[in-house]
Image (cartoon, rainbow, N blue to C red; front, side, top):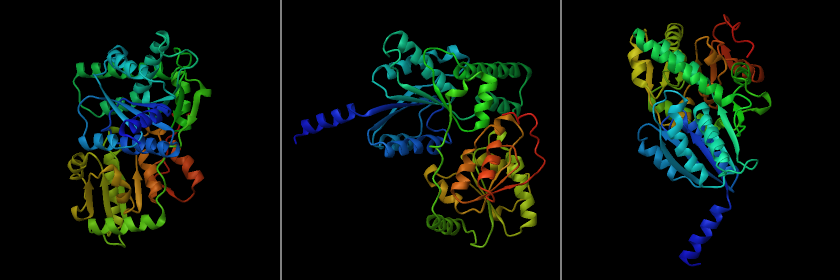
Amino acid sequence: MSKNCAVAHNLDAHKNMKKCAWVVYDGIDNSVFYSQVFVPIMRRLQADPELHVTLITFESKPPRKETVAMLKNSERLSLTMLRRWPFVGQWSLRPAQASLMIELAGDEWHEVWARGPFAGWLVCAAGDALVTSKLWIAGNEPTVTIQARGLAAEEYRMTMAYTPWISWQKLVWRLRYQHIKNLEHSTYQKGRGTIRPHIESVTVALQNYLITKFDAAEHMFSIAEFDKPETVEVKKRLMWRSMIRMKLNIPDEAKVYCYSGSAKAWQGVERTLRYFEQCAKTELGSYFLILSGEPEIFRAKVVQFNLSPARLIIMNVKPAELMQYLCAADVGVLLRDFDPVNWVSRPTKVLEYLAAGLTVVHNGTVKWIDEVLNAQSGEIDVVSKQIQRGRYENY
């Protein structure tokens, strides 16, 4: 076959594939991008050889070169990066909407996925405009799915609540909080525009919250399953355990407690370090492993606690190597505040703890963990029985 014939054959094959657009608003350098976006996309590509995914991301600054290279070297996966501007209300998303319209108008899409309310709003707004302008045919537009992964406005509220502000700054962040909440309502509410998206929620609690607070349609929901990490097989788990413990100079017989995640306001960093401090007093040979993309925050906070530097390891690991390090631990820790943000969530780190075979210690602030506890008895331990659920039990 000549070179020109081969190129023509490849183009025809690409043209006949099912085309999927995957829109991500918070960039490819986000801490959960690898596990919650890239890996699920690759699984879908492996499961369906006729599928081609175009990943459309919005970036406020140039992302890491290694992440871009990883995406560009993936088969049947294309990358398009668009500019993300500061958010000061729905009107400020119009330039992003215009950019997205250009991308979505240029091909026949089988389906469009949007991660979170910002991407969801953009896809629906762009889709409505494309139908109005007849670039998408009404009734024959692609299937749109919004991945609901949390409560954006409430996460922002908690972040700002832990930040010292002067009076005029408080007014600004309260206005921004309301803007984000209004955007979530516009994204999820039933009866909105021409595009009627399907909503994939991570938990039943989040689904019920969106129905109650944002007037979402119950029949449009499903619960996410495809983005859960695969359980590490026992043989590989033991191999990684031995390899990483040797690398970190942790004795085979030592009990290792692990916290994996960022240092966001609602994630209970001080509470976790206090728990580590208590364990260090009662289990003298224990080690404490903190895996975070923000190691400097943990190093600054840990000086307030009585933890031996010889038994405390704080490090930032590559996303592709995270499971190896988790397998070196015995216990995964998740101790959070009592807040709707946590109550309706499905923490990625708990999924990873369980996939690595760890016992999970938690404090009853995440409803989904109770559901897992009922389904997988014995794998999760509750630290505190003083669980204040009254405000959130309806979700």
